Image 1 (cartoon, rainbow, N blue to C red):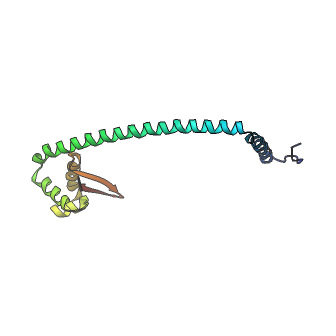
Image 2 (cartoon, rainbow, N blue to C red):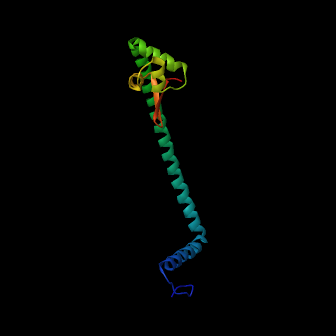
Length: 150
């Protein structure tokens, strides 16, 4: 028979009575100032360790960000210096068109250059993207391109 004087009917009631016993036990323990002091000490120690870990993580993320920015900046500038001379007239025309606008897709380039289909325009845009001149982002079925630095 349980402490409440009621016989448990199912598993839920048994679980509830077990939890109530734990709560009563904890309530009695928390009346003891030594127990509260010990818990507060452990909590502050754990918090200090957690803050130290977060600090280390933030430091490492900062280092990774610096490394990433330095490596990307170096590559992009270098590819612009090298590839700018190697761009064909058509690629220069595409890049100039994109640079004047916000974002474009292959259909706009197709219209601008008078291509019959989007495949040629898409191939040119992907080529400029791979060379580091353009950014690209998929939005639904469309792929948008824009000049780096915009």
